Length: 114
Length: 116
Image (cartoon, rainbow over all chains, first blue to last red; front, side, top):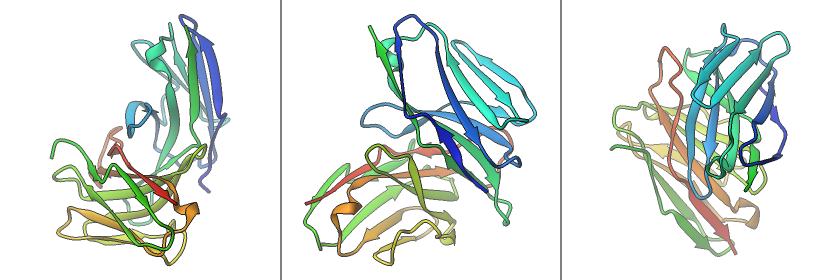
């Protein structure tokens, strides 16, 4: 089944690292994504990881995937006030027609305190 | 177009009226998705189009909701006899349908619907 869960809120001080966690239930997911939503805007793809990888690093972002536990995390190093947003975890599956379908989590609101 | 365009960006309507929300996807994207985001909630999947057909309508909350897509491009989401619980941000996304790699969805900025 498809179910992606995240904690709703995270508060960190500027300059600290932020870690946003996500759990998913479908082991057949191919890609896992992190999207960022700034106030009043749509979702923007931040980064992704292929399901056969354990880690991906992209500048200040580190994605860790524990496939055994179906756990995904996003670490933001040196968090800035501009990182304040809602972060959505998502998993990509293929439906019976072979088309991709992406299921989103509830989103984690990151608040960065100056 | 360069991005996914949604209109209107904001809509205030009276309870019981019908509303139409429009989505113009990225040119060449054959897959189109509608989601609803309520305050404090995640993204609720509504409907998915592949070309002009809708293989998955499972997320439409009631028969007051319908959507169509014409010419494999613009999509319209219609809500009839709006209720206050329909108040939300309606997000549209598009993508290439069969892709390799980590390509995800491209989202529009959404339509904020308020039913008073």
